[in-house]
Length: 354
Image 1 (cartoon, rainbow, N blue to C red):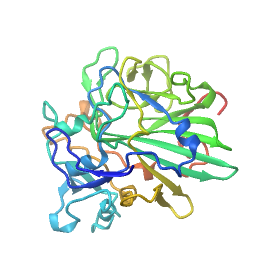
Image 2 (cartoon, one colour):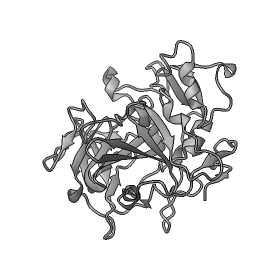
Image 3 (cartoon, one colour):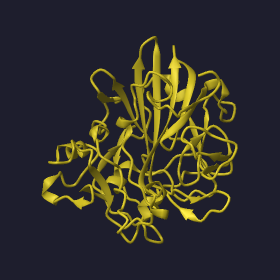
């Protein structure tokens, strides 16, 4: 049943009523749920899946580093009107808008909302939290790509180099990741795992399956939430190329909580030619909010300048800054891609003949 609930998140700001899509619509192709990924979080993970609307409620729109006047945008911002930020004057059609944390995200401890919601160890759901957006894209030759997007309010970049971890770099507010499964005639064929600015693609047959089901397992890296096909240490010094070891590594294990992102998710279809998103609704209650998907800005703070006391860029190198900028949303992840890897992603690692 589709319901509306009042969202709260610990000490996070209270937010008004917003509809949550808490069951799987009957109009979704059955294979999209039958083969949906299961996420295995790292046993030391501190920043859990986060409610998308609660994140919006705990941020304020900035034009780059400047706070916008409250009368210049819809207030409060919701999943249904977030796209109106694209019309802000001099914002580069919204591309220069940053959803900036109202509470300082650099404090210790960090604001409660950044820690998200811990999945239930029995049901594998995130109670009262919608941290998943699942988008299907119909393509030629009886092909359908299903994008399983996951959202976290904070990305903990970790300490580097791996052999002497002294530099804490790459932290940022807001974190969108995804698994894409390509179906041909309703049969899963290939899988893409997003990892930082690139990713890895493998045949479906090569992916680990969860407890004798057809659902692949995605191992989520500690802090960074990059998705991997297996456990262990994963070098990502060169984007899209995983070497046996290296100075910049992610870490996954099989001892953490299991998260089934389909239990609480927003479900949409994307039409490539028109660029339109349509919610999968069963006609019960209010319509699922969709306009947040059209937002062209960033889902976190802009990278702090070096003269900001919160920032530290080691040796003055931009790529080695303690804090980086927030990410773009699902719309910007090449939903219309021809290959399994995003088109033009030259560093995507394709395995198994993909």
